[in-house]
Image (cartoon, rainbow, N blue to C red; front, side, top):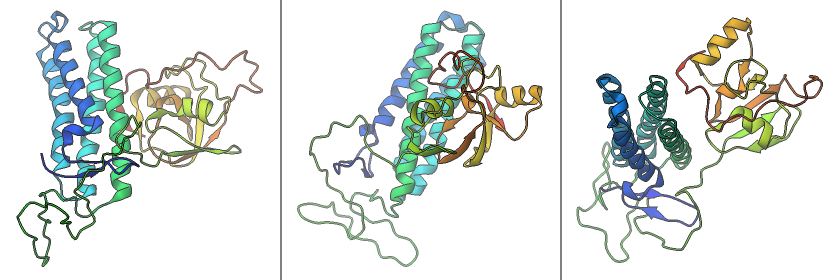
Length: 303
């Protein structure tokens, strides 16, 4: 496949989508889904089997299509779709487990891969929006034309030739110890009255408050949306969507103007007020440590 993408602080530029860690992980997810739906547990549930296969295929396909786009922002749109498809895979795996179509270990393997893809997609999106190149060099030396811009030669770039745009076509092979192929800016979390911290994209807000910002937020139910002790007030950066579980429990408790930090992932800069803390609560501890991924497996709606 053609196209070029700057990938990390060492200047490595991948020329194929297959070189990206997010694409490699997406393919692993697709293979895992094929193995899972091929099990006896799915029986005659053809609809769920097809939906899982379609969603996992969509992750791979959208990353590949996006890599061929002429601009970083166009690429990012496809990555958004791939990220959403990975979230769909995760949700449908949860449904399959609820219907006893698959074992606990298969659920863990599948959701871990889907979550990894989601985090990598979030990082790639931030990287693409930050770099915002207008010409990604997708035609191997032929510069895409818009309006009255003249096209460059169709001949491959060789030797010391360089295109006149801002997209390098060479690969700097200096070694890197990075686990990822890019280092985009991480989202910033500010808890009112405390320091601002960088947070890994996709981390649960409740864990980011407790582990990164070092604020003693409560999570009595272990972050499973069965209580409201992890509630926070948003000052800035509130997500537009929420899980069905969060919406249900907030409505049942008659709570308004607050969000459940256990049901939110940090995918953008956020400023929150921690209004339910261990200090002064009379509780012996904040509750069981929430799992790294949103529980129960999320189904999203608007707030």
